[in-house]
Length: 74
Image (cartoon, rainbow, N blue to C red; front, side):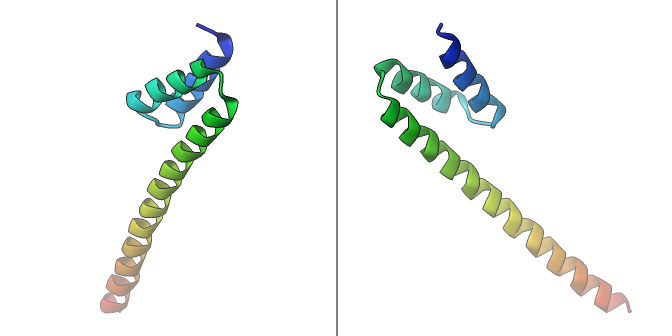
């Protein structure tokens, strides 16, 4: 396996991407179409950003509940 491909797949794995994403990235890489690879990696990034935003919404909800409970105790 190509070293650059190994690096890309390792980075995707470290980022929390699943096996399907790794397989797709490998397939796209092997086509030699750098533009397609960049588009695919951006798509993966967007998915991770959506997960991040959803996690932030959950934290915000908990913060609200904490403030509300703290006021009720006072």
